[in-house]
Length: 141
Ligand SMILES: [Zn+2]
Image (cartoon, rainbow, N blue to C red; front, side):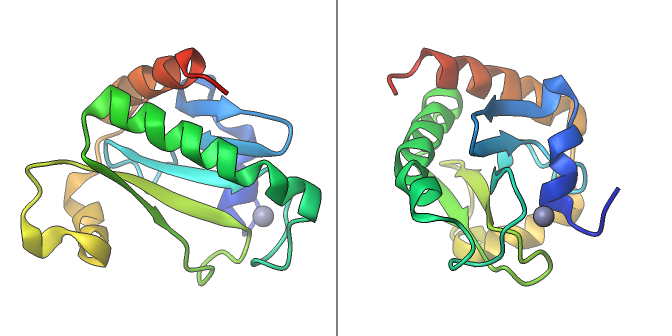
């Protein structure tokens, strides 16, 4: 384990991997294992918006669009949040969250992060992740 959670996800178990391309990868992360929560990350360590190369960024949009579509198809979530703070881990990455339709208004937006402590469930995260992985694999590139 390094001090960089996004780098450590390179060693994630196969069951936790939603997709993995040459440049981008998406996993379920221990500690952020709320069902419908994922980490989309640049596979190599590069920090902030200045870190990725233009070539890497050229595929970011399509990978993000495909991931969001797969999450919505698999979970029925009306919207998918992409959150990036670069605070705890400057490694270029996003916390990607399926915002379920029943979520109370006071828990929407950035407030959804307060749900992490009470809603972690790795088994359910992996079950939902299987569906997202299948939807991602079946979606057009
Ligand atoms: Zn890193």
